[in-house]
Image (tube, rainbow, N blue to C red; front, side, top):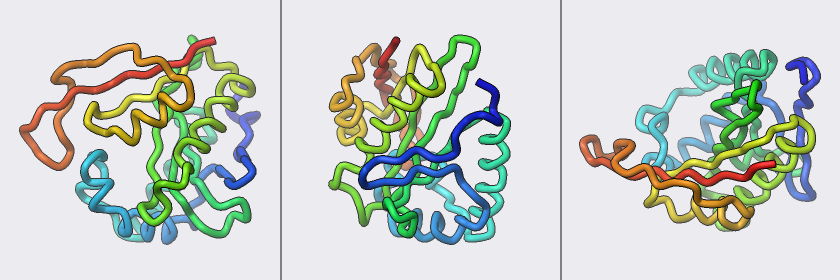
Length: 185
């Protein structure tokens, strides 16, 4: 599939996953700021969050990477496209295999409602059925039980535990394990 042919939206009954646009910067900034205590535990990028202008620039680059097929980030909105719930998408794309990794985060004000699972399920189906992926991974810190639960709920198989593979984002010097879940076609 050529990058220009990749759909920019994916829908579920409750969600609209849409490619980022620069004007989404303020909404992303608000969601990140509302979720910093939780995000900082797991995300390196949350250690030094951007201001609104920074997120606008970040989303400009994300839109460019989407258009080139380099990375397919989607913002997760309610079905009406009015309330930002989080972000998900495909990274570590390898079109020759083809394969990718799904990542996700949900605004803390909306956690516990199944949105991460719903978005990851929609992207899993989209990846296999529309993009033709043969392999999709979900990687997470071994201590991130919520993220691992999403992978298990969606039928991903725990393929590996990489021991002492990363450093805790919020605790420099503390080494952590990484879980690698996958689904293949």
